[in-house]
Amino acid sequence: MKKIIIHESFKQDWINVLTHIANLFFEDCKLYEIIEDPDLSVRFQYKMENNVYYTASKLEVDGKTFISTYSKKYDTDGTEKEQNIRMKRALSHVLLDVLEQYTGIKQHWGILTGVRPTKLYHKLRKQGLTRKEIAEVLQTDFRVSTEKIQLLESIVERQLATIPDLDEIGKEISIYIGVPFCPTKCAYCTFPAYAIAPNRKTGRVSSFLDGLHIEMREMGKWLKENDMKVTSIYWGGGTPTAIESDEMDALYETMFESFPNPESIREITVEAGRPDTITPEKIEVLKKWGIDRISVNPQSYTDETLKAIGRHHTVQETIDKFLLARNLGMNNINMDLIIGLPNEGVEEFQHSLNETEKLQPESLTVHTLSFKRASEMTQNKDKYKVADRPTVSRMMEMAQKWTRENGYNPYYLYRQKNILGNLENVGYSKPGEESIYNIVIMEEVQTILGIGCGAATKFVNPKTGKITQYHNPKEPYQYILSFENAIEKKIEMLNDLYRVQLKNEC
Image (cartoon, rainbow, N blue to C red; front, side, top):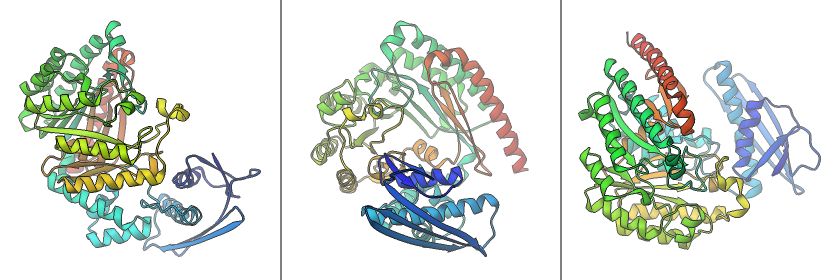
């Protein structure tokens, strides 16, 4: 861990922001007002006069000194909250600059450390800024590179082509349904995912499914009574194809009976990410209900890697199950690859791209490995050797080149803390095969109603954009005990939002 002394008592939210900036360069660091033998010493100067924000920083390390200054004038005084944000942003500029000078590492996302940079782009777009003006703001105010700005531009263009009414879609609602079971738990995973075999033995699978049927019916009743239109439905988890085919069939029957106007739902997706859960019987159930958008996720095409991360299937099984799904009529298949998995470098990733090219899925999501705090991989880092920053960046470049050459366009993007190389996760698709759900959840343009174990509901006010969240229990046993309380709470929150919406419309 890097120890950084800043010689000053900052507010905690300032400390948090500056720590995020420092962590872009170092795996882990902490800022101190006073400490002996720090690794780096940074001094700041800052002031605000006549709506001009001035900041400066001086980094001293290894007998060398690096200096940066920054200033920006705003047209308005701003609220106290806005002034605080402006100063944090100005301090981030100078800290980023001196750390770039010292390390030689260029941060292409600049001072942006949030999950959704495309959401910022949409915000500027809806303010009436032109494409050129947005690029200027991203460059000057956030230090985003030309390369990343171009990526954002192309993604937003695809999103608006896929959902022309994106700015109005807040009047509708999408649904996420969480099934928390998998054959095994992957080493990098922090999703609510539990090995299905022991839960089957204890009766928790059947008890969970009973509760899920009830929750779908009750939430569907509210949707019908309030004439809510459903945009998309996403079955995730876990792996929702980990349960038996007859259990899937019963759930989909309840879904179509419960939710309003099923014929107008634009998209239904079922995660079948673990190839070892896919069978002809389950594919036939999906076809029966008109669902042909699924995921079959290899993550890697190296068997040793799959073993290391706890995925109990082989590369050949991934290929076989993809072809099975395709031959049985699945016409919109997504695949995932992860950059930076243990013991993988350029050669292994190129092999994964070569194998993906043979299959030509309709969409491909390229993830960059993130060390999530609660994952087994993070808790046992010494056990997992991962690629360095230059190698990870090279693999991302390979993915970008490969997708262009194979006719895929980027259409959604998100970032995570502790992501290798400070890179991003990008969803690519063939033209016309973009996932509506992936767009609306990343851009937070409408309420996502979470149903099932570990499902998070995001209540998005369509007028103000204000977001309120409610989380269902993550553990199956707790869900079984409390799903009825979750139903009541979400209906209460939906009623509050719906009343506010009607009031604003009046």
